[in-house]
Image (cartoon, rainbow, N blue to C red; front, side, top):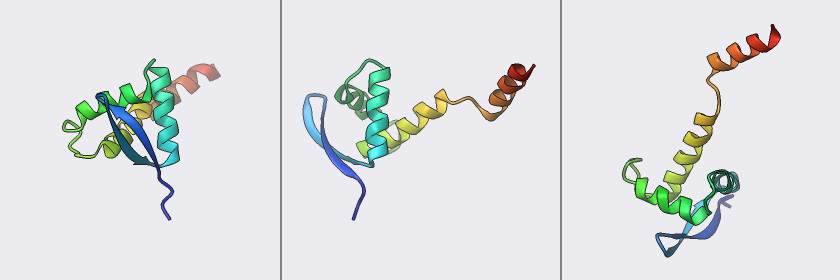
Length: 89
């Protein structure tokens, strides 16, 4: 049994469905909220990037985008060590 959930979203005004793991649905909703967008508007923007991400699947594009978004928001290990060293002083 798959743990993926199918949900409908509007992409460029057309209803489509995507199958994602619950954690990706949660992350997508969080990103949309942080960016002041609806999930549908965010998915529309991602659909425009599908070719750039070298995939033909919106679900795959969403997974890659979520990973890139949170990776960009996370300090690199050397930056984190530097911040910890400053905080310890």
